[in-house]
Length: 103
Image 1: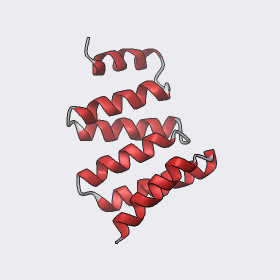
Image 2: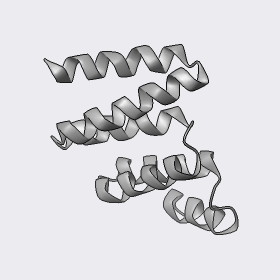
Image 3: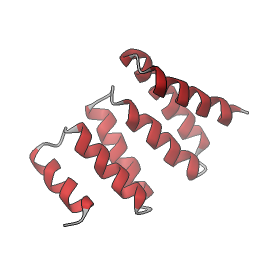
Image 4: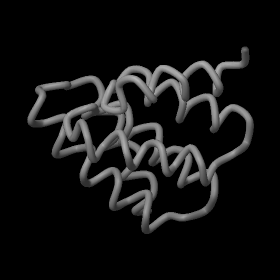
């Protein structure tokens, strides 16, 4: 069974499982299915608004697609989440990404 099928099967039992939803989004991204990846990141953030890696990786995906404004919005949300959760490492990385985009 491939990763996408496995993650999907697990999520049928527990749709709010953050780790599995993140894995599914990353698996889609790895296969170049960016729309599906972004959709899964969105669902993940909807269920788990403090899951900081989802903001960071979805922003990176948006940047690769040239969707700068959307990436900046996602980074803004992610920076707020990183502040809420006191995740200083992710905060610094997302601020650097934001600053690089703003140039």
